[in-house]
Amino acid sequence: MSLATAPAPSFDKGLANTVAAETQMSFIDGGKGVLEYVGIDIDALARNSTFEETVFLLWNRRLPTAQELKSFTEGLRAEYDLPAGMLELIRTMPRDATPMHALRTLVSALALHDSEADAEGEDANARKAIRMLARTPALIAGFDRHRKGKPFVAPDRTLSMAANFLWMLNGAKPTDAVARALDVCLILHADHGLNASTFAGRVTISTLSDLYSAITTAIGTLKGPLHGGANEEVMIMLREIGSLDRVEPYIMERLARKDRIMGFGHRVYKAYDPRATYLKTFARQVAADTGNLALYEMSRRIEEIMAREVAAKGIYPNVDFYSATTYHSIGIDLDLFTCMFAMSRIAGWAGHCIEQLDGNRLIRPAAAYVGPHGQPWVPVSDR
Ligand code: SDX
Image (cartoon, rainbow, N blue to C red):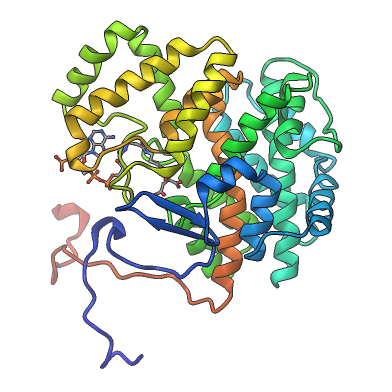
């Protein structure tokens, strides 16, 4: 398109009304509260699929045959182990470091141990995507063991991604129910259109930088409390409230101050986030099984008050609201919640980066200059 025919640029703050990419992975209808991965409703996937099968679906645009799923799963498990040197790097980290800072650093450092780090092409990127996805659980669990002064636990290739993470984190095999709870959370968080962290990763890869750099960009972007950091903020809020009878005054006071209630609202969903729909029922069961029903009841009360006060503004629970209760119920430390989000979303980020490279164009929007013109340079002695 020549400059002469290019439409005049328009300012769209937050890019809320801008389509910046095409994707075949997830479809979102924000008005109706619909999310599909490659055309399959998220509720059906959460109830019937596994994280490994969901990743295959997102990356291959179709469900795997039994043999394909077996091979894909074996390929992931073959990459569970961290390269030599990574555990030493974890040991050098301050024990009081924020886990998302540690994770961003460690995923970035994986590139130092991958001879294909700068290799181009879809096959090389697919192999790098598998390595990052397969190794991130060990990075998170390894940092947590390090900060608690506990010995590392080697991955177990007989276990699923979810179960293997919990094994390396706790040094004990999880129950099937607890492993399934994490598996469902990983399914629900795997991809979500052009959210901020996915867009950031696409910007990075659009310069023809490498996949490790793009995923590192995305992790840094996910950390923010308006995005992936919200699940931790939900748990902090629940702890601040403390008991069911304090929910109403706390929420009403926050709303009166025009504070944002974490875990609510969404740029796209103006209806119930379909991930929260399933997670709500699931969170109740997990909370009941683990003695955390009081926490769940507080969450439900918050939702009732928000429905009464702000649903008319299209503000409903999002995926982070009930994932917080779920992660807490299965024994995940609060400051690891966003790491759980990242562990799953590497699937979406890598898929989008590979999609971006297919017909890539450098992502470089315009900025509207609103400063002065024609200013003189003034010698410092005259300033
Ligand atoms: C995720 O994009 C994705 O897909 C992200 C994600 C994914 O899977 O990748 O779905 C994951 O990030 C979910 C969102 C997690 N974030 C939070 O829970 C943080 C709290 N929510 C927000 O701050 C807010 O809802 C955003 C940032 C998520 C969306 O904000 P927008 O679209 O920029 O909307 P806005 O800030 O302009 O708010 C519009 C109105 C405002 O009121 P008015 O000034 O018009 O009177 O809604 C109000 C806001 O004050 N509002 C809230 C609110 N969120 C918006 N009021 C109270 N509590 C909230 N949570």
